[in-house]
Image 1: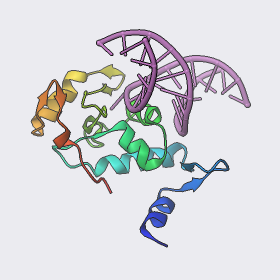
Image 2 (image 1 turned 120 degrees about the vertical axis):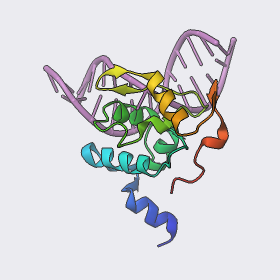
Image 3 (image 1 turned 90 degrees about the vertical axis):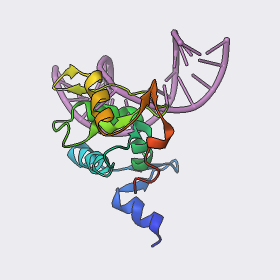
Image 4 (image 1 turned 30 degrees about the horizontal axis):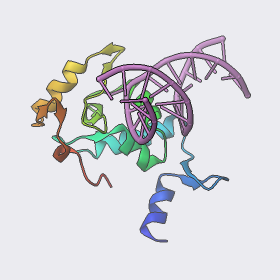
Length: 127
DNA sequence: GCGCCCGTCGCGG
DNA sequence: CCGCGACGGGCGC
C-alpha cells in the first residue's frame, strides 16, 4: 500500500457508491480525529476549517460545528483555525462568543494580524 | 428518520 | 462588498 492508501485507511476514508471519498468516522471518533489534527498545528501557525475538512473528506461546516462544542479550549488549540481567506472566524467558549480572545491568543503566539492573517502563517503540510 | 444548527466556502452580481 | 445555496455531521425530537 502506498502512502496515500495508508493515509486514507488511517482516517477511515472510503469510497462511496458515487465514487467520492468520505470518512466513515462518526460521533466521538470523528471528533477525536478533528482534535488530533488540531494538535498538529504548531503555536504561531494557523490552518483553516476547509483544510481540516479536506483532510477528512468532510464539510467545513461540520468542522465548525465540532469546534464550537470543543470542551477543551486552549488544550485543543481551536483558536488556530481561521477562515481560508485569513479572516479570524468565530470563537466560542462555553457558549460565549469571544472573537477578541481568539485574536489576542494568536497575537501572543506571534501571528501578525493586519486586518487578516497573512498567508505565511498558514501551515503548509499538516501531515 | 427528519429538521435544524454551525466558528464555511465559492460563486455570481 | 453582499446574498445565496451546497455541503456534511451533531443533536434533539
